[in-house]
Length: 359
Image 1 (cartoon, rainbow, N blue to C red):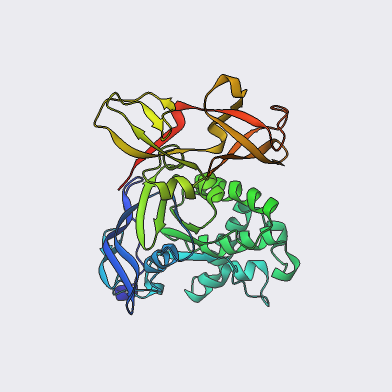
Image 2 (image 1 turned 90 degrees about the vertical axis):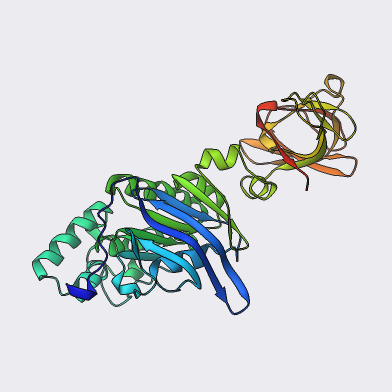
């Protein structure tokens, strides 16, 4: 195919198929991506997660070629791609809007990329038929997008991307247009397709639940920087900084200190956790709402006033106040007779307390 050949993957599963090496992207004076080094492993589902404007979509566009790096190198399958236009990269992108052609049928939408490549008609029909079976839309082949549900349109968009056999599938907020119930269903659908088809997927989202549900690894970004990279369990249970702890799942934060014996104490001297010995230091104590137990105020010196109780079906969220500090605790719906204005004791699960040193 000469100079116009698409990049084809030859790396083994687990090897890096996409690599960022100290990549920077500027738009004028604005730094969208700063010194990004990141490998995407073949066969993994990697999610770029962060708040709006953190640089995750720009990172995706650097992979598909819609943006070029200001500095550094982006490589696919070991080949630098900064000089390659999007159509010469073996990647496909599924957007939030799906971008389906309304005048074409489902099978015509899926076949579009293959037709553009001038593949033989028999090959096109065979690959489209196989892909529609894989996404469970064979019975919708003659329908048009207007006749489909949101989840079905999402699967058509996925089929259209996958039928081209990309080395990497890019998902840009793929479930953002769906309602909450369908979104949860599609999270598991995407996970199933990833596993069944052994895909390499890079997904952009700001939805923490999506990232935790679907991903093998999560790259958390903020202000153009990669803040933490790890499995869903690692970033949730072992956040490396206050931003990650607060962004993933939410946390309560309390001022405290660690004494020479390693005991973690609140600023008023109440000890809440033993620890390793070390130099005395000030810390921020982070604990998630589900790791706080509400007990009798006589059972612990650490008490708070109940300000509000919200019923959330399988649990209740309790808003608490301790002096000028606001806290939240999650507990079973029938956990206790907790009423606004009452005094309760608080106990933390010491195995699920994170400490962040000040300064």
